[in-house]
Image 1 (tube, chains in turn green, purple):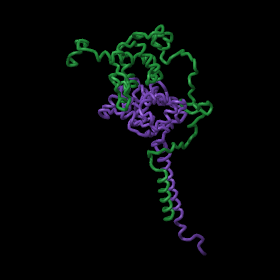
Image 2 (cartoon, rainbow over the protein chains, first blue to last red):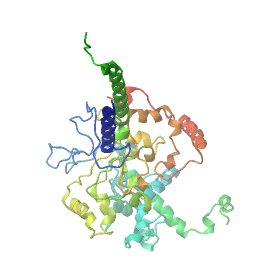
Image 3 (tube, chains in turn brown, red):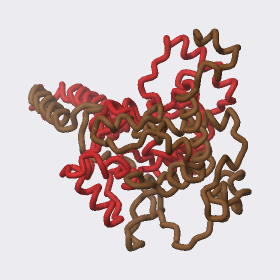
Image 4 (tube, rainbow over the protein chains, first blue to last red):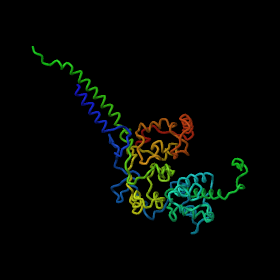
Length: 209
Length: 217
């Protein structure tokens, strides 16, 4: 009996020291104890494929594919609208917005700007986002004269295709979101050159003017 | 007449009973403790091909989760970014760094970086990211404080029981929609959170399904 308990205690201790405790950090892949149908022979998003030569389950869009539909039905209705989709009208950069800019547009634009643009362009568009401190010093200041005069269509094309050292953001910002961001950039610019006279009477007191 | 069994054999049945009971209890204990994702999954922190530091990017630099995991808001899947996303900044920052060698070569060649997947549900379970983040469930609730992780670590068991904890009482876990991606958000108090949660669950018609087919098919 004593021998049994000695062996038992020892093996339990050995087992515990091998298995460790719950939640211990480790780079050992998770064990699947009852692997019944846990892993199936099917393709999942962004996973590995043995079949395709490039090893991806996600297939790239074949070259020359024409967009027939966007996720957003409102965008789908506007597939023929060049101003909306390319920022150009008859080859020239389009001035103005291809849709009505509402409060929702502005809020969406602010939201998207902060996610995708602010890190480099800065919260107020001065080109001094957090990356400025890390050596990205060539980001332009939106408050320079030439950006006030730049057509909305040109800004749209810049976001869509990228320019200079800036990459394309078309995979991150939908067409509609790009226009919303432009509207917000316009608001940032407007705010910079605004004067007290631009503030509505009702708001002045609240702002301490 | 001589004895067939020696005297000590009287104790054998009791000893066998004790040994079997002890062994039984131990086995049950070990299975309970170890045969669960709380042991098998939690704590998994694989070494990635590129030592991307979420703590630096998401925490210190304050880059929004969606800058890289862009499609989380309208997709089932929270997408791993293409290398071009890294290059938006790293074409100018740390361009000579050895740590980024694989990122640069991936960008040149178009070969994917072989990231190691950390959170992986069983394949008969269909989780949808968008429906959660758009209904008050923050990244934090499932992934923990990623903004503080140098190496991402599997923080929660992601077992069925764990999912159901929230599906049964969503008001304890929801937060205001504008705070979903704010990893540092803290409710004023636990009670305030539940009060806000009850209201949110009602206003947003949050109705987490408890049926099998909600997640399994």
